[in-house]
Length: 631
Ligand code: GLC
Image 1 (cartoon, rainbow, N blue to C red):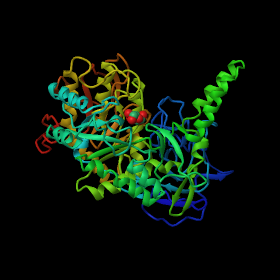
Image 2 (tube, rainbow, N blue to C red; image 1 turned 90 degrees about the horizontal axis):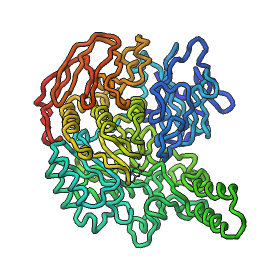
Image 3 (cartoon, rainbow, N blue to C red; image 1 turned 90 degrees about the vertical axis):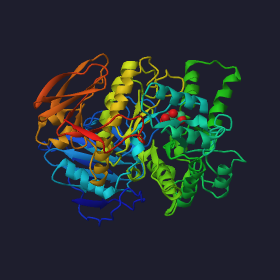
């Protein structure tokens, strides 16, 4: 059952697809007081665990930390962070009472889940324009099902998007990409997608192609397709401000960019230098931007990743002028003491994603003009929606689409990746822990940069990361410019990677089948053990294992140099082991086991037999029907 409460006229977010009547009572079990929603967790063991909040740091059980929904471009995902790129305002309370709560508000909202007072939940919206939905049901799964039916069906990518993808910010030319494809093929490692990062563009201009680096992208895309590989270019939110660049000229003339209080285009700095921000909350502007993707689909492109759409701001023109003034002032001959040093340093550091800048521009939505801060969390969501709507119009086939920033609702239009993580062991675990939260909020097609985006990856880290990512719907290896190369062929011996990635392809009939089932049933593809074994207190404590679809449980290794780990089996299961390409099985009883998982072995567990396809080099070669059952 769902009850809806309203707390002042809401700015329509579009997150829900059902119009429910308002309940005039109080939003029990929350107490509404002083601009907050309060819940005493200790009142008769009312709350034991808190799930949800989508893409946030820390564990599967969110209790004990404070989170802030504010789509943020932050490349250091340490556990002290309160916000990442997504704003997913759904929590699921487990305890004496079980219920879900969705705070549908487009601006900032803070979830203090026992941080200030360990026994108290305090939820504080910055702006009280919100709808609150309280969802009840017989089980954790049933509550999620009710909620998901409220927010509408999740995006389903084409089958080929379940293949393996290689990406790197640093492939600059057609030759770089071709070399990468060749190396994968020579090593016999399956591959379906090669990603184009910003360097394919001409001066980082959206929808342009660099004339020397990719002299004939259409022919090149066709050449790659012959090998079963699709090219997936990045699209950034900001548009280069340059007269003579058609996208800028037209958008400017038609008033499609976000404007300052005087009605002038608000100028920010992102990859292309001075840029403007398409006003995705203006439906006409959104449609116009979406239709620009045609420039690339006309060249044979079938999928995109949308980036920098929090929106990320390196600086604003206004902020930069101020900072330059400060730095110039250094030459006045006076002493450069530590105070001045830190003063200047801070002026520069504060340029990026500055709160004053977010407060300085506006959107022309159908309901009126909004200050960006009041609707901040809807920006990336509407960028993805604009692309999805247009791609449905432009193409007959489903397209691959995923985004960095998101709000609940965006799950109907695309997937998400978890942004700029690090080549850190703890980020394997973090990725695992992010998945169920995102699934609750509808984001089923998701994954993290395998091997880590920032920092230098090592062979063992990549092997372990892949052994987990074999199960994530989006399986993409991506890394930053200047980092150590981390393709599956970059560490000498390629056999181990060939076996792991081949296993992924063999699992696609299971993974895709379970994914589609989860979409159609408004269910979660990844679930904490507690969701399937509600009466098992041990299962509820497990923070590093997940259920994947109906039959599989995973328990990956995420610790450096560990060759075994404890695994909890909530019931009797079959252990499946892939060792050098061979599959073996062993029955294991309910309870704790210390399982040997040497580097290169992929071990997982099944409740019932699952289909396993024959090995293939890409999804076009994959025979989804020719399967054997294991487990
Ligand atoms: C952002 C993205 C990253 C991309 C980089 C360059 O940091 O999150 O994936 O490689 O921009 O485009």
